[in-house]
Picture 1 (cartoon, rainbow, N blue to C red):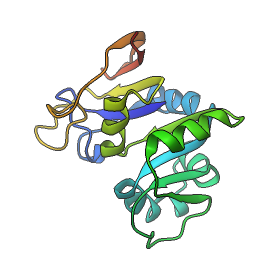
Picture 2: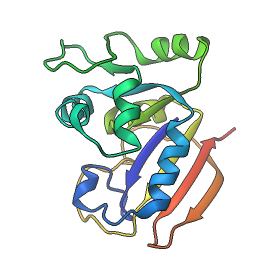
Picture 3: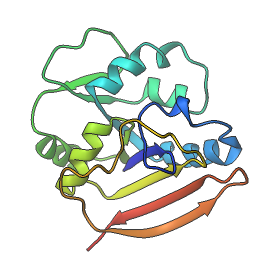
Picture 4: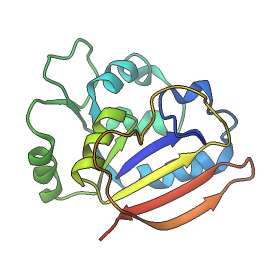
Length: 175
């Protein structure tokens, strides 16, 4: 399951620059998503950024979840920061994810990690895409859906609006 925060103009990079006043519905949505996840996949950049923040954070419900959950970090270089429950993955994502999916357990989530999400989208290696679209225009930054790569067909499963104008969208990989 891929989970991304986006601005109305598709920017996914650094949500704190434009993601403001998310409100209770955003946190409730996140809580529903993470309670089903037993593993998290992260790209190296997200790991490096998050490892300096989340281990000492008290922002709930995410801090407790991300600190206790196994984190599988895709990187060709050794990690330079320690973070509990972290595994370095230095082999192809398709092979590794297939192995994880065969194991018992709940959902496998990807949070942030734009490059990893783009590669999983392009390869069709996901079952569900959850987007939180903020009622804000970022103007610039890395976009989740850029012009590079092949994008799969998506089927809308659920759409909810929040009182502050954000959208909570759930898509499945199309047939």
